[in-house]
Length: 248
Image 1 (cartoon, rainbow, N blue to C red):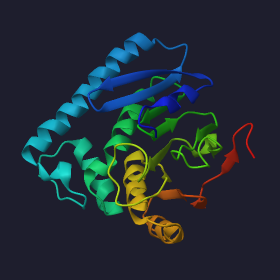
Image 2 (image 1 turned 180 degrees about the vertical axis):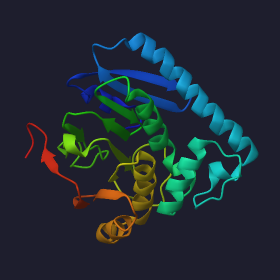
Image 3 (image 1 turned 45 degrees about the vertical axis):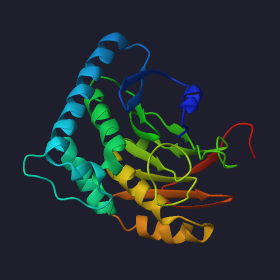
Image 4 (image 1 turned 90 degrees about the vertical axis):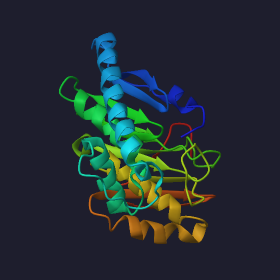
């Protein structure tokens, strides 16, 4: 994640990326070039307006939902998107808004999946991807020396997958920690997002890396964790790291 999302200039390959922005929601939607992007874009705006409207209307009734950093009990009439966020936050031990970017990316991806063969939905460093092709996801950790030098290889057989990142140094999201990047893999992108936040919260020094990963890997549904701070990195699970061309 970068403040101005210049990392999107590195998106390339078989997909065409279209940016979809509504207020704070800023998606990069990657789909095969042969699809009618104009119609899909219009439909995607409609989907995002609906999801945002549901959350805004719910927060008007349950304001604590939007500000708590702890697990939250929902009102009985909470919309599905709020339920998914709260479920993920409760499992990871954080507030529901820690899962909002991953939850929205996944909702968009699930809506698109029956219509396109391959897709990548990126929402501020939180990604949902599906299809039948292997993907490389570059790691951005701000000014850290690992940035733009390594990537996660996501095998086709592992898709769909959520790949979400939290940072205590980069981007607008709040973190109690100082991690350059905490990256989490899970089939559910909302869960990956919430767990990335939790992992990042626990990392204040290099000595915290292994302990933070030990906590994250015990959460049901978490498939892999990568954490970076300063010049140290630790990883667990289905994290296949590769060097990007021209590095190492």
